[in-house]
Length: 394
Ligand SMILES: [Zn+2]
Image 1 (tube, rainbow, N blue to C red):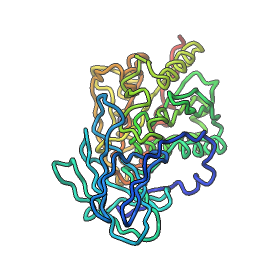
Image 2 (image 1 turned 90 degrees about the vertical axis):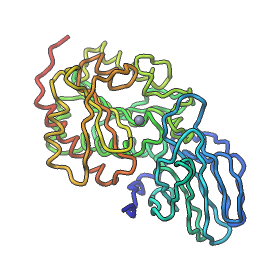
Image 3 (image 1 turned 45 degrees about the vertical axis):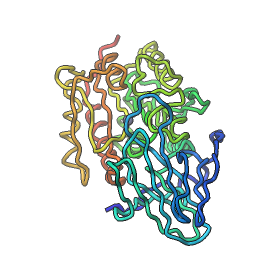
Image 4 (image 1 turned 60 degrees about the vertical axis):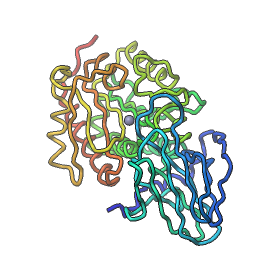
């Protein structure tokens, strides 16, 4: 079932070079007889390496810091063969259980999930044995596709060049990486606001954000009409340091950014806070907010009837309209009161009373289906927003 090559970035990456290149501690290359394990690239996480046999190493995969980390154990490393062999890599997780099906790539762009028979999970999911047939090519092995800041950089610039959106620098992360947003129709007072990649491993959500944003910015009759009325602000990558470091959850400040809204202690969330204040000051009104993530299945976290939105039942109507058009994409609407005020969607709801949703794509959901679904959700969202009455001026 996982035989699909899951990347569509071949076109993007040819020019992926504009962001400053971060310095990595490449660690010590771990040499077995038939291959060497290396890290020291954007998104790598390899941990301590023990050579157990000429073709077998064990990697101890640890989270980025001692704070609470939700169980999303990211790993990414590269095997450089010295001879064709059957390679075996054991991952031993500390502080987490196996979650992501290993994906391999020989070019860093096209990824193929390993077959079940090559992945043996044991010891209550704290260990996994990965078996790979190596030829003379180096192979990346990664929890998810490597969608790094360099790829965002290319996607951002290409998307801005192909649309009426401007690419703006919002500011910088803890580690000094740029954080950008795409903005279309900045003179409109009604805003659709999108955020992505607060959590580094959540790559399937990134694919949805790309397709969703591209649909909003497309040269179609619907999208053009939408952009005549609405402003779009999309921040595709809020946690570049976490992505570069191969973090499980946090930013470089040891913080879960999606537990920092309203608190706004981290530079990344402070940038969002400043942007929201600026929108408020200039009389611009958020109408809908979406925050893109990944979890074990496709779902949306939304407001239930105890926390009514303006307009009422907006997301429920959106799902009813979108569902008949979806193929190979099932999802659930996890409506609730949204108790934690430091989660983005809950913060935005409390501040504005608008439909604010966490858009979660399954970790292993078919990438093409997730992209196609994002197109449908974006189209139905535009139709529904165009039906919204204009807001009362404040
Ligand atoms: Zn998340």
